Length: 459
Image 1: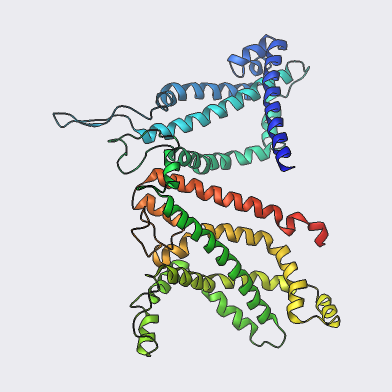
Image 2: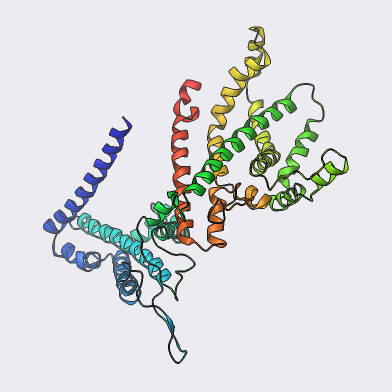
């Protein structure tokens, strides 16, 4: 059923594109000379109809596009297939000659492609605008156009600048990073001295390769730990945080505000301070080992950060201290909204505390906090702070390549690949894999959430 829906959406998309292309041809065939000339000179039809605001907007867009492509964009686009062939360097007289810059060629080529797409979109609006106005007896005046920008189309006017910011600082870097994954951009291929070029899917094959020099074993180890970490870090915090909230809200418990304040203090302090301090506490010469040996409970330091298994358990344990207060605060308010009559009816029917929790409290909490659980899980998949600030992903081993450690997540491994090894190509591949893992899990879990799947049934 799902496959049929996907095929239907793809078919509908192709039909829409075909219909749009057909409409452009029909517009040219049936349009008057003003409309036809507007295909070549944007805004011409608007000028002839005395719509000068639209005319200058369309014509200005075309002029700026042509100037950009002639003076800047074209020289980069022509080299996108090779990402440059001329290396820079010093000649016999020690005079430096600048060559091609693969980084800039790729970046500005992507920017130029987006500008071309944006120009075609505006060109299409120009064509449609002329077609709509050619048969009208009266067209919107310049005053009407300016007024509409501050009235009916004010949303577009208001969102123009934010959308440009999203494009420049979000979309463009993402596409650039994806493209880097298909190049050999690393420490030995850095512009302008050394050029980099396209290598196809070689980096992706290397990521899963178990041969010498491949990252298959390391990727499998870190991916497995990332998923285990995200699962336990999410659900241990969730259920224990809920348990703490239930205990504090229980009738007869005194000093409720004090207990909540103590727990909130753990999240009031910035993690950059608290996690660095806690990481030192569990070091071989830290407070924990020092006092345990002083009291005679142990004879030698416990390898909290040097034993792989113990390091992972320690991180999960410390994460409880960081995460439980968040869940406690969220669930405290939700618990107060559960009708008391439900609990009283359950007691009359003879239900014990566990049955009441399983049949009343837990279903309600899962329904309301389902989206939070999903965002918490995806957030833990990319939880850079707690891993890196505690022990920088250690312990490391010769079995793991790319500078990875046994407690590294995919995101911290990506960071090491970028900063320590300057292996940008593999870092980009790992970034894509992080997105794929996060997106797949998010889509699957989102579709089975009770709050999404059966909202009416719950109510």
